[in-house]
Length: 355
Ligand SMILES: Cc1ncc(COP(=O)(O)O)c(C=O)c1O
Image 1 (cartoon, rainbow, N blue to C red):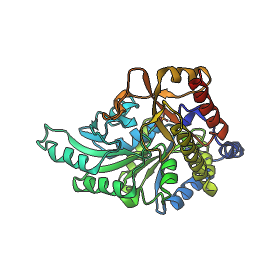
Image 2 (image 1 turned 180 degrees about the horizontal axis):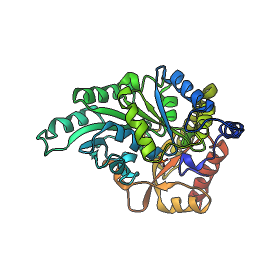
Image 3 (image 1 turned 45 degrees about the vertical axis):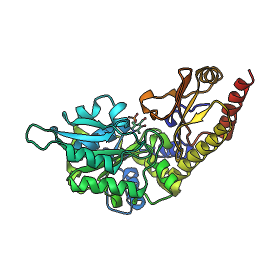
Image 4 (image 1 turned 90 degrees about the vertical axis):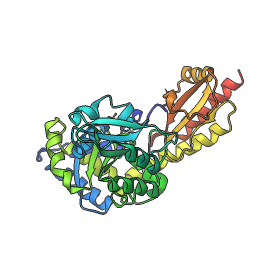
């Protein structure tokens, strides 16, 4: 019963087979191979526009290289106060950007809103060179509280960004889950809505190890080319990424996997809601579930083979009443989550309730 994170699952067999198939003979290095070229062409078809794509091994590298391409060292990058890039990537953004400052905007809502962003920006000082200037905004899709930004919400955020001459980055470590949840075109929630760069994650959603920096704004492509090389993220056996992405995208495999992960989360939530003592906190449009449960039950579940993380208490909304005997946890489903995993989890809760 692995609900710790979607990266606890293996790679999909389709992706693994593609790596093995690509592991034959010679081809060019550094992304000049046929697998990488094919993956780039597929990405252009998926996003319905010409693109510059830079493959990297981790989501942190994708996010931080993207942000480094968008801002100057003396600028700031705004995000939701609970953003992964702010809370879980150490000081990598500051390192990659040569010192630009991450600013987590306090917000009671579980997504960054255009209104709060605008309020922040109108109050930000413009006394140069004393006040730091905002260079970029980053939002996460699907986000760290399992929420998905609608097309309109992204458009509103990007309008605020444009009116202040700020670039917009999207952390899409779970982009596939967001597309599956919205049932929209990937273009609608990215470049058509004003996103300049997307970190497109495949690792959590079926790849072995592959992320893509998808650049919609051609102004930053040369900068990214240099930054990736300079930071040691240009791998020489580029076919490793090309083969994974190509197989992941082919025949909508990426969406099939994400649709399954989301459906399993819906099913799990439905059953959790029928359990007494368990409170699901946020809506579950994608594959992340946040809940309160008795700490003794959390312990019982873990003792019986369930894995999940305690979550950051500061992300719990203020209006949610909870006692000190309750634990706040996150569960994540993946393409590998079966009905049996869910059934076992629910049966274990029921067994605890009978003790
Ligand atoms: C929203 C989000 N962004 C980025 C990442 C970073 O991924 P990595 O651990 O590959 O650096 C994660 C990983 O958990 C994530 O959840």
